[in-house]
Amino acid sequence: MNRLSGVFQFLLGFFLGIFLLVGGTASLAYVVFSRMNANPEKPLFAEEKPPETTAKADTQPVTQPQTKTQPVEEVVATESFIEEETEELPDGAYRAKVTWSTGLSVRSQPDSNAERVGGVEYNSEVIILQTSADGDWQQVRLPNSQQEGWVKAGNVAKIDE
Image 1: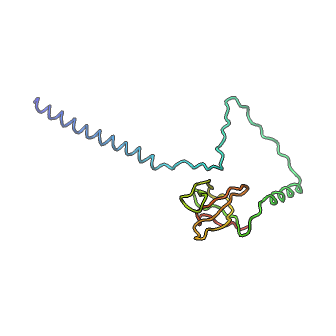
Image 2: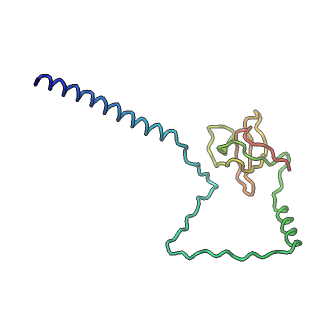
Image 3: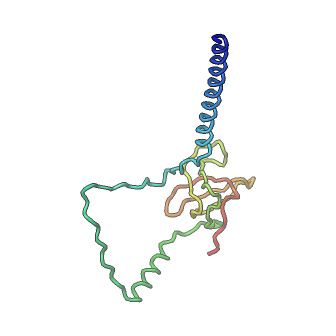
């Protein structure tokens, strides 16, 4: 009987050890694969500003400023002023929107190994200045700035004005 109890204890310990080893490995694999399945954080490009956090514990409630209605003539004059502010495009240049869902990297030269000088988000507007001789790259300028660079061709759509 004592011998039977020793064999039973050995078998019970063996199967319990196997169960713990398999269970631990499976739970570790689950944690690793669930983290690999999560989407990465949104990239922060150089020309973007991080959101400002101005939360204070003892802040007063914010009151909404009263809006003033303007006569129609003043609104029309303001809109025409906005249209005049748009920058002039060089010959052969056109406006386009980024169609690549994750945005584009702006490079210093028309080469995928060139230095990255910035980025442009999806659906952002850019000015296409020229296309490289092989047609694989497009030189762009960001509107209302002087930042220029190269993006991979085929990832923008011309805006009809």
